[in-house]
Length: 554
Image (cartoon, rainbow, N blue to C red; front, side, top):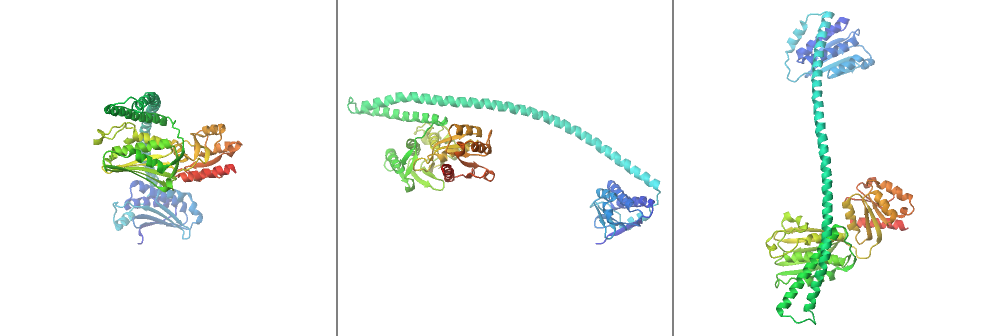
């Protein structure tokens, strides 16, 4: 589509600049532009025309596909592209182009999409009928336009000042509210810190109470059990059948109470971190068969069957036999209590990929509702069910089993369906011999990782120590250098890089093997085994430690 010409004018004298400006404003008005855009077009046109004055340029006004086009053919050179007038015009309209090869300047201004516009013939008639004006009249018109623009600027400035005042008031209000909120947060932190201290003191007091009461109860209970054995043992005075039954009942109750007291004492030790497993090689098939024989249910012929199934790949396990027996006896006792028919099965197999022994206790009992699957690991919680009236308990069984499992370096999880049964899965590090390394230091500010590392290293290292920052790690290493340190690079007080530098400067610490365990393996220093915390497996960790310890001893 070709452009439709509306008017044209020649630039020959100074007065022609005023004529072209006035013509440009008129064309912009008739084309449908608003007053401000009319002034912009006229000003841009006059700036360019002043640069082209005396070149014989011809100014042509046209309409082309929703744009007002103004073209000026002239004889200026390429330097004209850098002229001040052309630069100013470019800031006033949509497009200003300069074609040096053909000597043409083009000014374009987009028209509003639905602006009122006269027909082309009427626009031409109106433009042709415009009366000539003097330079003084044109200057007077420009002054009016300038005064109007200044009024608009003053109005905008007043509105801006008012807005700034409102923003400043809002800022002051928000600052005051933020300061008040900060004071509240500080006070809340102080209160939380105080409550945390109180909770810690209460927990410590509870643990002391459990430990003291448990210890004090053991003596009289043992005395009761000993007296019962004397009363029904050989060489004692004969008792009637009813007396023997009642005395045995007293002895059984005392032994049950002694077991519960032992659980309380172990729970207190576990919470204070004083459970100290004494590991040895345990023959798992023999242990499982012993549990089957001693715990086989006697509720009725064929009601519930206790089965064991130990895979050949987990014949020997390096763990604390007494603690493992207490965990499994606890789990089997729970399963037998809440299973009225079917079977309870104790199974064990090796998970080679994870380097773990997986022991499961599965039953066909009443199951546990989904909403209680987390609460069953809370101390003294008992799932409400129809059998609870008949089956007595303390609510310590599962919490006790999980604490002992964690002390053995493992995990305990539970899955259940109401009416279909429950499966408890115990995972322990699979290590079938004596520890391979004496001491490992875990230097990491992440408490969860320190606990996970302890579990992975259980049975592999004789002693596992932990430090929550670089300074504590350095002090512990200086006092007793470990064989290997698991080092996190991002720690408070003294980071991993600085700690490695301190170790390199010390002859004794320079011999300590280093394994870097970090969330950013790509940023870890070279020269040491590097593991990612994400998805870290036990076999990977043990292999890296073996490598670091072997390098250390070369």
